Each structure stands twice: as C-alpha cells, then as structure tokens.
Length: 476
Ligand SMILES: Nc1ncnc2c1ncn2[C@@H]1O[C@H](COP(=O)(O)OP(=O)(O)OP(=O)(O)O)[C@@H](O)[C@H]1O
Ligand SMILES: [Mg+2]
Image 1: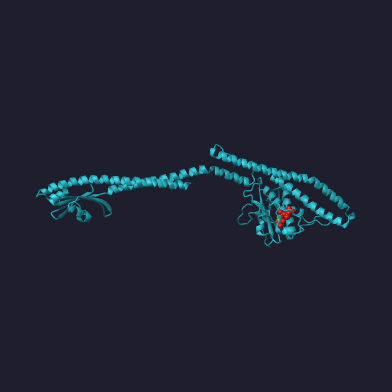
Image 2 (image 1 turned 60 degrees about the horizontal axis):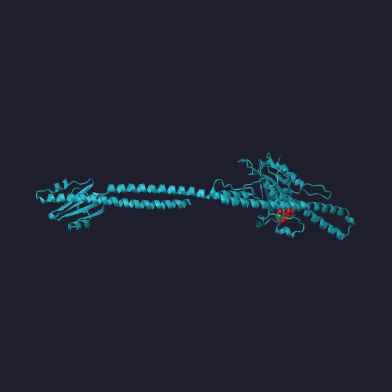
C-alpha cells in the first residue's frame, strides 16, 4: 500500500512537473524570440539607413548598433562580412540560415555554439545589397529553465515522500484491525481461550470484533463442556471401578479355591481393571488441564536431589514389595550445584515415572539420566543458567522421526507399542508429561540418543515459574 501510494504520487507529480516545465519553456522561448526579433528588425532598419550614405564607415556602423547585453551583430555588405565579436562571425552562423537570408528571406534559428544555446535572427537588406544578423545568447534563459527543472524535481520528490507517508499511515490504519485479530488468534492458539478483541471506538473493527468474540466464546464454551464431560464420566466410572477392584481382591484372596480357568480369567480381569483404573485417573488429570483448573503446588528444591528422589521412587520392587536401587546412573552436572528449581514435586515425579516406564516397556530400560544447566556451564564464559534440563536416555530401537511429532498427542501409541502384548498403555502417558511440563512453563521433546536409542529432554525454567504460558507452547 505504501509502495502504491508512493508510485502514484511520483507518477502524478512527474506528469505535472513535465507539463509545467515544457509549457513554461515554450512560453519563455516564444517571448524571448519575439522580443529579440523586434530588436533585430529595428537594428536592421538603422543599418539600412546608414548604409544608404556612401560616407558610412561599416566598421564604425556595426560597433554603434545598440544591442541587448549578450547579443552580437554580423553584417554582410559589399561582398564582405563584418562582426562585433571575434568569436561570433560569419562562420558561427549556421550555413542554412546564411543561405536563406542572403537569398532574401528573413529567418531565425536556434543553434548551439561552443556548448551554449544561441538564437540567430537574419534580416535581408536588399535595398542596400546587404544582410544583417543578430546572434543572441540564450544562456540566461537556459539557466532559468534549469532552476525551474530543479525546483520541479524537488517538488516531485517531496510529493513522492509525502505520498509514501500517507500510504504508510493509511495502510497501518487499515491493517490495524488485522493486527488486533492476529494477536488475539495467536493468544487463543496458545491456549488463552478467554482472549477477546476490544474494538474500542473503531467502527470498522466493531462488527468483526463482535463476530470474532462470539466465535471464541462458542469455542471456549464447547471446550469447557467437553472437559466437564470427560471429568464427569471419569468421576462416574470411579466408584464402580473401586467396587470392582475390591471384588477382584476378595476373589484374589480365595484364589486357591478357584478352578485353573477361573484363575486365569481372574488374572485377565485384574490386568484390565488396573489398566482401566489408570486410564480413568489419567483422563481425570487431563480434564483438569483442559478445564484450566490444574494448579501448581510449587516447592523450591535442589534439581539434582529432586531427580534422584524421583528415580528412586520408581525403582523396581522385589517380590517382598521392597523397592531396590535404581538400575541406571544419574549424572548431575557440577553446573547445577547451588541452583534452586521451583517445581511441583508430584507432577515432576509423574513426568519421570512416565518416561522411565516407557523406557522400560519399549526400550529395554533407561541407560542414564542426566541433570544439566541450560545454557551449559563453561568456565570461560560464565553465562548464568536460565533453565534445567533433565535427560532420560535409553538404548532401545529409537523413535522414527515421523513419529516424534505425534508422540505427545493423546491416545497416540507408536507402531511398536501395538505389537507388544507386555505393553498395557493407553497412549496418554506422554501427553500428560507434556501438560505437566507446560504448566511449569517448560518444554519437553524427544531426539535421537547417542547410541541410536531415544533421549527425552525435559526443560524447566529456573526462577519463578510463570502460569504455564510458554512462548512457543512447545511440547515436543
Ligand atoms: N523410550 C521409548 N522408546 C521407544 N518408543 C517409545 C518410548 N517412549 C514412548 N514410546 C512410544 O510412544 C508411544 C506413546 O507413549 P505414551 O507414554 O504416551 O503412551 P503409552 O506408553 O503407550 O501408554 P500410557 O503411558 O498411557 O500407559 C508409546 O506407545 C511408544 O510407542
Ligand atoms: Mg507410557
């Protein structure tokens, strides 16, 4: 729009300047030519009169002719040429002009002499067998025209700049509503469903803002309804599930009295019930995220200690129900020392438990867990850390690049997971991991591990956690 205005202003001002210049040039030249013609004819009459007297000295006569400043006289009489100036003589006058005048026709012509414009007016004087020429310099007129051209070019430039400025102002005004809507749409896409556009006193925006706000309100309403529905369903399922679990444990205690087929049926029932209970719990948790009612209960902790505790809490349990040591090392980078992380311990433990469980199910177990500062601590450039990264590595088959985008989606289960009978998952684990991490204002993603396995990286910001609104909303 700015460019269009600038081009329009330039085109118009260039056209106006061109018309003005050429009209003015023509007028000036015509005026000058007729003034000089009058003078040349008057001088020619004087010369003719003087030449009638045989006593006239031609040299003196030509010098005595009264000319305008900058004009020179050339006279042809008695087969001789006489001139008032050394530089402007017979040869300076164009041959065509000379021939025309000497043949008896008055004529005028513009020509260039030594780079400067000249006007020559020739008057035949047949009564005395002579011809009188006057050569006028048009330098002054050319100078005036140059000044005019310069002034017009400057005016065209100013008009173009003014046009561009007006274009810019008009476009920013015209596009302002679009800017507001874009901002609102970005906020809504980032999860802030209560965002509304304020039209202010902008009449152009009013209708659009009303429609946009209505759409957002409908969307928010619908999402909230769906979240409530999931939450209600999960709640309703819980009590019969509890009853069922209690029934199964009663049956478990009388296991020996059951027939072998009934025993294996009981095992199946038990497995499915556990899976179902966990799914209902996960759904309840997810519905809290969707309803926006998930809240952080923050504690200030030592990141290394936090990770060690979370790892120990998920260590394998032996036959007597005693938790053993972790089967993999936890490396805590020295750069983490002294840093304090504000974190919801329960949620962080869920994140770690999910990642470690996945590694056990799909990748033969965790190989190591790393806790490091971000940016990494280097001795020669002590940049303070802004985040903590917790990396969970495994040596499994890895996750194909094409799958990594979907991993954190709800109910997404990889191709491999479906083939494994051992896996009892529902595909909610990683989506919950992403939600927990996002609530902390952090992000989580997965990349290829050093040994071809998988690395899950959880990045949590240091300092006061914000309200979970990470700038890029990344969770991969
Ligand atoms: N460490 C890993 N190595 C290879 N594949 C993995 C790994 N972690 C997760 N996956 C793949 O990602 C999928 C999604 O994981 P997610 O934890 O969300 O669901 P799940 O484990 O199938 O079910 P849930 O955790 O809800 O019980 C898994 O089904 C599996 O295919
Ligand atoms: Mg899982």
